[in-house]
Length: 290
Picture (cartoon, rainbow, N blue to C red):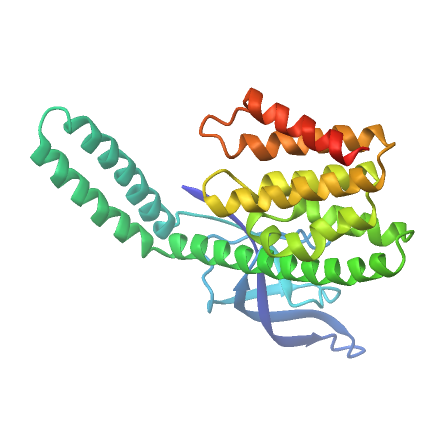
């Protein structure tokens, strides 16, 4: 037994009952056709329990005159056969998957047949309205997230241009930092050379900018390919450049040291910096901080 709470929208076909003495309206005897089912709403205390009210059904309801909205709050207590079937198929698929895994250790043929059967059950479940609704919701959310990311990227470019013209624009800076922190790895990669690294050149003494740039570097770059090492070197070179421009800033020296260790670590199979790497970093810092 499933409880469905819904707001049913009705299409009214009103029959007016008049007072024979003064011809005033006494009540409305309406026939309502169900148009859609959405969500629960208790309209001004008027609450009606109507089991099994499908879309397209016609109901005759004596209503008071004040009820002029063509919507009535209802609670449907009914067995949803479609939901029951979808749930049973999903449970059957889970059972068959676990059973096939168990059979792997005893009977390979039965394990294979059970796995094939589980695939058939899963295919049947994927064709149920519930599964289609889940896929539709996921696709809608993905499209919505993509549109939001695109809009954020456009706003990022606009605010970065404003920041390039006026480095003291705190509103533009806050917007740029917030958006960069929320972007995914795929969205960050195209922005490294156009926004992320130039941002460090514009505001090298801002601790928030350095932290955000380094965070973007760590999210966008991994030690999976040779090209990755080149990108990490770009961040290390940028850190050394701002240190050379401001050699008296201890914070920039610490920042270059941290970025340098990260740069060398992602080029190592074990992700650890060697003593030779540390010596190379110290030499770079010494040369750039003179």
